[in-house]
Image (cartoon, rainbow, N blue to C red; front, side, top):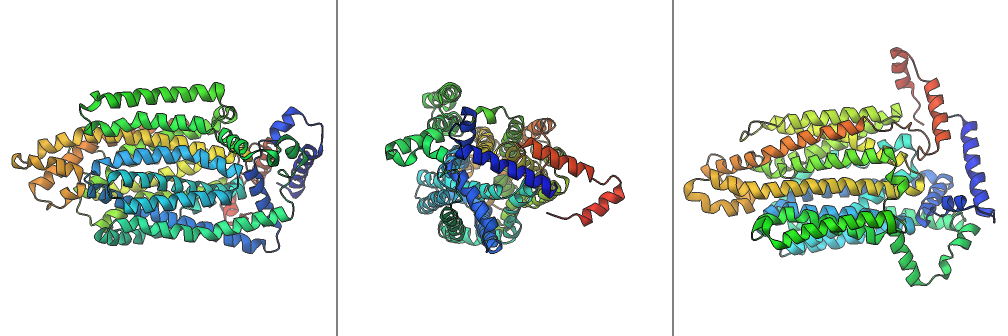
Length: 619
């Protein structure tokens, strides 16, 4: 877009804002447009303006980016190693099969808390929300590292999961707050690039920790995360304070804001109640409890007396279903500020992104939840090499995520890239499907991880950018958190299905395949995958374990492959916004102007396209 066009658009925005802020006769439509800009959004916009105009702006940007990247690096190290400790932690309590239950609880609660964290970030500020989520993360890992039973361990994992989800959300949200669409996919993907480094020594760390004590694996992050995240919090607070000092918070100090929302005159009880209403705490609690009660029985049925006929499990599922119905009724008819407002609910781009990611994670958790344990049992990989294998998928997601960002930066589009990625993912699942009881070779397993990582990266980054582009800045955190919420709910459903099938089938397979004089070992082998690996590969007990695991996972791979066609179909109906210099694609005029100029200058021949690629000015 030309400089004159950019100046004209920005001038129009300024005049519109000034009219809304200084006019006494404000229409209801104008009030609706101004009031939704919450305190947190106003603060981050002021921070962005201050960072761009301060004399030391470049140094501040470098420091902020470096701080967020270091924080992301330690978070990535957490993900690269702690997933390998969980099987050993649960096995130490004799509860290896509870991995699915812990995953479901952690996923549901952390997912439901994402919109709450997003609302807190909007109601307060990004740096203050950073402090909150880091505290939850630290306390959670302290509890997990000191746990003496599965209950305490699970509670710590849930708290740490909430904190981790919050840190990830705020990191991504700040990048989205401060960058235009054309760069956003690349920069968001760049936050995950530390995986490409950590993958080479995460195995060494996890191997050393497991040999000593798995508890240190969680405890060390309770120390590291607060230390590395402090610089980012400090930079944001300094910029925020400087913005207030120079009176850049126009919205929060405007006459309109003071007249309509006299926050200073409210009692603290009213302020807390207003925050609860804006967060839609009741609706999100209904959603969280509903999904928890509906899905947890899938992982608890095998250990309950009478199995699925257990009255408590039946009651949990009935109450869970009723709570989900109550959530829908409450959100449509009674919620003062719904957690999923109509402007987002009926946004086609956002809905397609949700559908794609929900089924993506649903299929992924069905196919992958017990794949790590399966590979540990059926191969002779050391703990170090097994950890490398576990990180192969993540390495593919992160490496090709950067490729996806580069593609979007060059093409200014994302739809066809997403379709291609989902097709690649289908090929990946097809590679490991074998006749029942047959183990794929290690090369097929590794290629499965790489192809799913490649396809998943192209799809996930596209969904994120599409959802963010389809809403105004005020709804950015809401759209990001809701996309994550519903996606992770899909993952929780997948984990519930996989856990129920695993706990139903694996004990029977072990009893069938173990030698007649060793069937009494079935409960022990079911409770600890490490117990199976302890036997030599040629022993009948190890072979029985390998065959049992192969039979138990066979259907998972077929279901995952079948479900993977649904996101591919949804992607064909996705909107294909132009990714330009704006923070979103809601401003149709600026979007179309940039699109027309881009298309007018677009090279026509292949030679011109090749030359344009190498001469392209990245601005």
